[in-house]
Image (tube, rainbow, N blue to C red; front, side, top):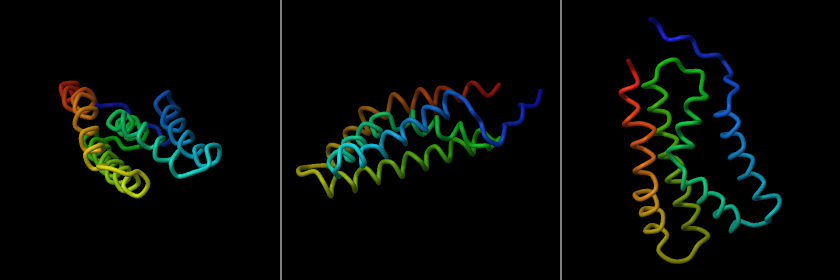
Length: 123
């Protein structure tokens, strides 16, 4: 049985969560006035990086699950590098260790849940 076609714009709870995350980061500039607050909001988004990337990729109008996984991995890479460069420019201390250990400890279980163990759902 072929998979149902994906709508051009998918309105769902996933899309709402992604938009909420983006609005939260944008509001950090406006309400909390300063790059330090933006770094902290970015680190909060970084903590749920694979989950955010999975939700963002599932909202894209792409039929192929493999292509969505590739785009989710690209989102995670951009998130990692962006947060690392942002944290290096604002925070003092060993930010590479902070971001690297955060990715290892926080992203590994999420990545396994959203990308590796879901590969069996293809059937």
